[in-house]
Image (cartoon, rainbow, N blue to C red; front, side, top):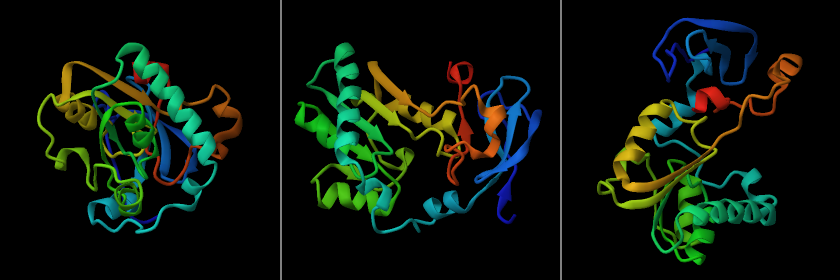
Length: 216
């Protein structure tokens, strides 16, 4: 398998791990023996290189065009939970916003919205079709002022990025001291030993796999 890179545990920095006995699409699954994080190591790098080289697809992924009604319902459920803690109006940043439909729903509810999305097709759609303030880049390159957002959302994104802890540090810098961070990730199922590499979240650009302990 070409274009593989070795990485340490993103949470604790340990290089000691237990290798699982099956490959996954993003590399090989291991579990840190110190903190328990599951991650791909060594991991495939073609998706990361495409983002770094600004070579992502220019069109939206077909899967993102399906079940819009279900996506909008889920987005509004998330916003209900956000607003139970911190009501609109306020400034909301969505990291990895893709085509922007979550931001559009937030904007409709009174939020001042911004997004970052490195994928060219997603960011272009959010800007041109939905008229949203979306920057086509990673958060560290977006140039937002410190402590400029009341809410930051990271919805099914941490598992994709090469360095989740670095992303969280960058989010903390642009989030107000009393700001709210919402993170959603797929979590390792209890039945993983029975299905192995057949778990549907083992896709080619998922590099980290969380459970309650590793998220905490």
